[in-house]
Image (cartoon, rainbow over all chains, first blue to last red; front, top):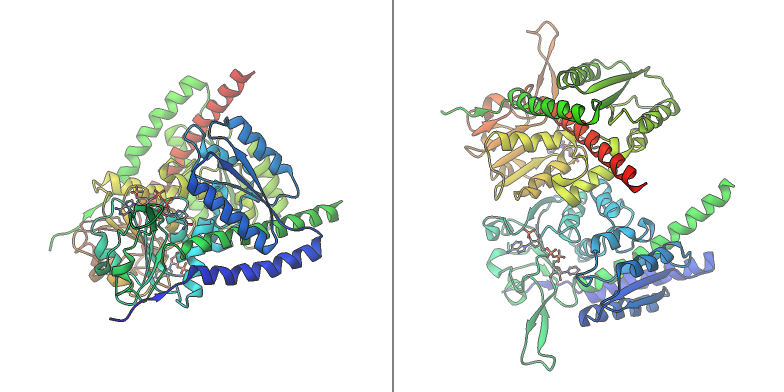
Length: 302
Length: 302
Ligand SMILES: NC(=O)C1=CN([C@@H]2O[C@H](COP(=O)(O)OP(=O)(O)OC[C@H]3O[C@@H](n4cnc5c(N)ncnc54)[C@H](OP(=O)(O)O)[C@@H]3O)[C@@H](O)[C@H]2O)C=CC1
Ligand SMILES: NC(=O)C1=CN([C@@H]2O[C@H](COP(=O)(O)OP(=O)(O)OC[C@H]3O[C@@H](n4cnc5c(N)ncnc54)[C@H](OP(=O)(O)O)[C@@H]3O)[C@@H](O)[C@H]2O)C=CC1
């Protein structure tokens, strides 16, 4: 049977990074500085270290100045809040990103909410998430992963308007904002979760499927309407004794089954992941531009 | 054929008002004052005048002190913003409600956002609407009409968990918050709108239908799964020469057709309307209680 078009997140993200790079250098010409991103990395999780390294590398590549603030996994909340407060007031910092998850003794909600709304380039501040309900993709900072999903669908040539989209997962970080963004693009959206009854038959009615549940290979081939576009947000670690490291990453979608049915499908890794990082760069640039605009306005008001 | 159970919003709202009345008098005993609601009525629209009168009457009945601030339909924005600013600082006022729609020269968004978040008992302030995404019905003030819909469904004996709910309409005031509240109650929710393709067949798959589109008698009998619960939010004025006034109110649902198929159905008027007012009273009481709590905290901090 005909195989799904692979949606190559690496290639699409690279295109976007090139666009951003041009805009970053134009910004530097105009404003005399590069946009700046500050990353807080707390603890020693290997996966978090990898993600932070990838984000820094991506910043370097497009000309965004990045700095990383490292803390031991026993750091107290006060220290983190002080650091964020300093960054909130540092005019060379346009974006603040706290790498999640945090060690369990820290209050994640409080820490995220303590970042200035205007520097919340991850789009996780409650005020920014809430804006997605009100404004769709016109919101201040749209959370990076949901925005990445929409860009992937669009740039893969699938039109969203009038389609039936089914979203699996309803987290505030991924599932709910993806649903609202798809709706804002005029899809009819069904929001599913762990209490959904007969998930396979609901997914079967979808032209677009976004899976964000955190269960390896959960979505099966016979759940998919032939020709549907499938976006796999999941990043799951599974054992793999054939590999040196002993594990490998898989998505929430059973790739080998679904590729034979779907019209287009994102791989894991190399699908949504690189898009998330590209959107982080885009949000950081956007923040820098908004910051300059605010300064200009304030000057003119004097 | 078997007829749908009518969901009597008047009766259910009356029950809720009685519960609120008891809580209001308990509040007065504890705190030495009654909760207060301030209503701004701008212009001479007959329907707005009627709604404001109904809200005042409902306040009186449960012991909430209400005051109405009347303005001509040519009032300038400054005057309205000044009035709201005064009310924001008036400690006897727990709730501020601006009756909508406003005359077209006034900036509705700006005016609503100028009400203190902590007094926004209509739940229309962007920060409060956004909270519904993050917190469901635990949000600060849940918008009154969406909250009324959920209460109606629950008090009519229909359980929401695991059901497929289809919401027609995606306004920030009704459609989107209803969808998120139904999801928070563990329904699987499909969000529809004017760009939805083949609406009838989507509605046919619903156990719960909420119609909030503003089109008289739009939802037909053969769109409804036998036994479904149907909540009609629409309030539409249609000509009726058989009446003295020359018009009558109808919902978005063709009541006469749907009553023969649905398991339960709200009438218009007498369905969602009275619930909206009951939720306004509930939010005002909630605001008064939160205000006293904040004062007590502030005192203890000294
Ligand atoms: N590519 C990237 O850059 C990113 C990838 N991710 C990955 O995406 C996935 C989801 O992340 P996140 O949203 O934070 O996860 P959460 O754990 O916060 O949410 C998971 C959601 O999936 C739902 N769910 C769980 N089991 C089932 C099931 N059997 N059927 C249907 N729904 C189910 C849950 O439902 P309920 O609410 O009922 O519990 C919940 O809403 C993870 O694998 C994560 O690693 C996340 C962020 C970025
Ligand atoms: N009972 C009460 O207390 C209240 C009642 N109401 C009533 O509820 C109704 C809705 O109010 P509100 O949400 O403010 O209205 P809006 O006009 O803001 O929104 C209407 C929504 O309906 C959608 N829609 C329009 N036509 C169709 C169609 N043919 N098929 C599917 N969807 C359609 C629109 O879609 P799109 O976004 O694509 O344009 C839009 O999302 C009105 O009748 C209003 O009077 C409102 C508030 C309180």
